[in-house]
Length: 226
Length: 169
Image (cartoon, rainbow over all chains, first blue to last red):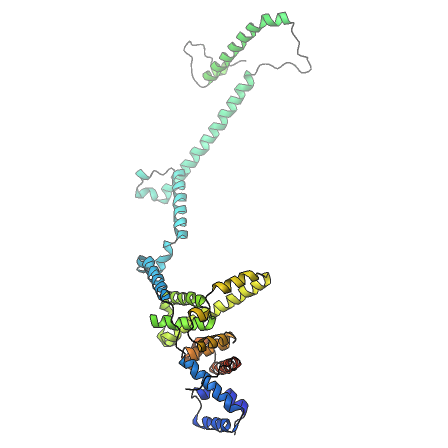
């Protein structure tokens, strides 16, 4: 089989790179010798390829080598002590892990405070689940009892205040305007009365909480009357 | 180190045609090689071939990235920025390439498609054989032969258009 121009063009590089078998090479050469179209093309391509091979490599700028050395040795120094660690331990030294660890520690401290654990008196036996359960249970009960007491105290104070309120005038009655002369004469008397009432209120409150005044005029809670 | 730097820099420069980009890419290749040295297995081919693979992958990433940037730029019609970029980048004939032929080859290379360009650069400027190029490009042998041949023919045609007719040695 004699080669066509298309064959030659397809195998041109293989011919130049000496990858054709001797038989193929002979066919190739025979066609090129005889073909006025292929011959100059093969010569031109041969010239181009050998010129490419002769091209001197470009010299990289000296600063490039320096930059690469700095970069790789800098990275080496930065990783220095980490490189000696096993691979699975490397993620431990990341900001994310540190943040997580700190959060867990804070949560643990808050929880231990809520459970009433004193770290100075802690012993191994305290870590037993039953002990932890009892401590938590006691803490919760105390908290509940305090809440109940607080609500009860509020109720008592409310009761006291409602009883000590001065009697409100009956609805529908108009407040009567006193004559000016009368008003002036009654003002000091009213003020004294108010002051006495105030003292009485204070004494009653103190008496309710189990306190007695020095002069012995405190009233026991059962006898509080407005 | 210096020998590999030269090889990588040449590959990057011949592919991108820009000295600044070639420098940055060479640096990036070294960092990547440094970080992935543990994954290198001698059975998969020579060290030079492996480095060429790393470089080639980076070049392809870079090519895709810069092509996307060019498309975005043209869409946004930021012509002054492009002009500024081109004028600020050192021209190959000023800093890197030495000699008239080297510049002409570079201009012609940049007109080839990336597939043909990388095949010709790896074969004729980096001196890799067909088998090594097959490993670097991860394509069948027939594709490698075809790309090298088409790339060379196209390059020869472009050089002829420029009036370059190198004589065979």
